[in-house]
Amino acid sequence: MDLTTLRTFKPAAYEDAADGYRAAGETAGRAKDTVDIRIASGIRARLDGEAATAALAELRELAENFHYAQTECGLVSTALNGFAHDMAAAKRKLEAAEADARAAGCTVHPDGSVGYPAGGEKVDGKVPEGGTVRGSGGPTSPLADALYRQAANAHPNPNYGKALEFANRIADAVKEAADADAKWAPKLRALKADDDLTVSDRDWTDAQSDMSGVHDAGKGYLDSLPHPPKDGSPKDNAAWWNGLTPEERTAWLSLEPAAVGRLDGLPSAVRDDANRVVFDERYAQYRLELASIPKPPANEWTWIVAGRYPAKVHTDEWMEWHRQYGDRYEQLTKSLKGMDRIQQRFDQTGQKGLPEVYLLGFSPDGNGRAIIANGNPDTAAHQAVYVPGTTARLESIGGDIDRMVRVWRTAQDEADGKAVSTITWLGYDAPQNIVTDSPFRHYADDGAPALNSFLDGLETSHSGDSGTHRTVIGHSYGTTLVGSAADHGTLNADDVITVGSPGVTVATAEELDVPRGHVWNQEADGDAVPDIGRWGHGGNRWRHYAVIPSDASFGANQMATDTEGHSGYWDEGSESLVNQALVVAGRYDKVQLD
Image (tube, rainbow, N blue to C red; front, side, top):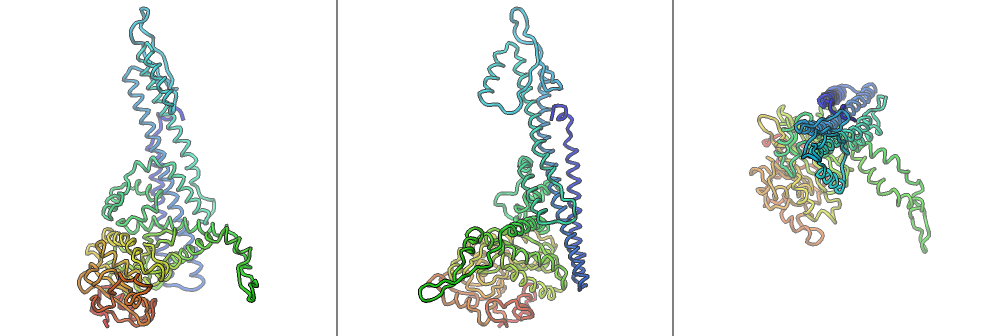
């Protein structure tokens, strides 16, 4: 990079190219949605058999290609804008230095040196002559800078010091441009796909690496953009997003998809786009990592004689494998089980009229997070948000997804043609052990702010003219979290359904922050959890539950329940399921009460 190149550099040319890649990415995104939502779902709704299965496999691969192209085009667009941003900053510094030099009567030469005119007081009867100086380029140490200033001040021609300053500024600008070129060139060269038509796990992990590389190189560019409000409300988040330009939105989606996907208040389609990138990249990463771990030894167990009786113990080979790989192998296996079920739900769109799915939150870290909506909440007349309870985690998300699929199907039939969206909300760290964890309410108190924010976000992002009717469904310990959310904030809901509840942290239905008469409860025969809440368990640890929704003094509508046990409330065709769906659809007159 030299002075002439920097002078003639046109950031607009790269910004135009970035716009082209952004447009290509948006086109690929629309094509992905067309394949997923219209074509593939249409086949699932109408066709069956080997030919349909083969076609769906091809369409899934095509949609994957479009999604990968969308992701990579977004990164290319952001990288080009980032390069243009860095080069434009260097060019502005150069132009400012050259303008100041001209104003001071100095001349900037093509090689970056600066000529200065004669000037100063006469020495031996002569005005000190002019000359030419060259800048050092790049940062200097404090000592070197002090020596330069001392030399400039000691020079008989005052123009010498000015010219030296201009030359250093010019050299610094050229070096800054050269550094930007050297930084961005490998990042841009890396943004290319394999020359095949298959998007593999390796391709997605490469995309993840590309994102990291562009993010590191583009820190200055990203820092220059408007940032999401720190600890902002959903309305604050929406205002931030609505104030971004298309280029700025692409940058945030490309470089910080996980951060964008977490922001309550943003349109559901935007959160889905962001979280799908996170999902596909982590899905691929986990599969590759699991494949790289040696399989556990087949001879896991052996028998030893301990005293008079034989004992079954792990073999030495298995214990060594477990020491090296066991914890990570288990974490990857469990997380992938949950991701497989989420992907399965993606692939079910269209079956028996099942609507498109929106991934409103996702993380495989720890016990995992997943927020999955059947149908677009932003356009739905009726929304239902389901909060699962003890032992809920990414590994077991499939059952919670299925429950809300059944509620959607039943509620949609009762909604008089209005759109319904049912949401599985695993957005908190649920207690994992009913004995050692669930007696304590701190899990609910810790998760309540996230639920409140999510519900407020649904209100903010909804685009329907007539608003939406929102129901919150809590199961087991999930009801405790719902109660805590009402206790510590505003529960943005019209109805609350508590199912198999051990207690909701408040004493009466009126404290659940919905209109009088809009709290509904179900307790099935053989469900021990309400009795645990009612009579206590583990000493006095359950004392904070005191009154449970099944108690008459609580004041909930007791819905007829024909299922048994703690997990049967969503059995296909059951009265328990139908009653929940009727509340979700706002058909209160048809709900059967005990």
